[in-house]
Length: 270
Image (cartoon, rainbow, N blue to C red):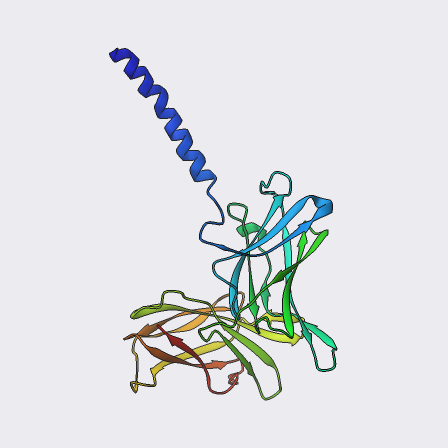
């Protein structure tokens, strides 16, 4: 009987390890994410989905794309994507106009668990007179249009700024769902507007940051100004010494030292 028990234990142990390994290799890729859009490409028997960490809001949004076999619902691991956000607006008189917004192209090299990351900076919310859609190209040859809904952000996350020569910039604050007393990550993405459909990341700006608490009449020490890291992103640290309403003032300068915009700031309440 002892020998039988020993053999049963030996037989079970490999099964347990195999089960654990399979679970680690095949996690549910969309746990803790929200599906924000979906479309079918019928002639490719493929379902395209866009997921996000939260509901889409004006400002910077991280996105994740996945292609599924429409019959089996299994991920297509070799799928590649190209995206472009587009807003269609109905003007007075019924005329329509379209424009894009800053975005970060889907990065196949950063794919994880069949989710390909991308990002978009939505400059306005969906409304009765305007709607967003994501143009997605699959494997360089199949296209889909995915309607998406964008809400107005509850926190201040977007600044439109310009210079005297009318060059326009969009400064987006990356969302932080867990601001706290003490040092907090503070990350910006800055883009230059070339035309209504073209934006490029800005990599040579300097940013000075001065937080203040207007209702209390004080600021905070030990802040770290955001500095350039990559692809128009600037990272720093903001120190909140107490909870409540904060105004984070920014002085943004281009490579020549010219200030971008006037009275630029983000409002943060936690």
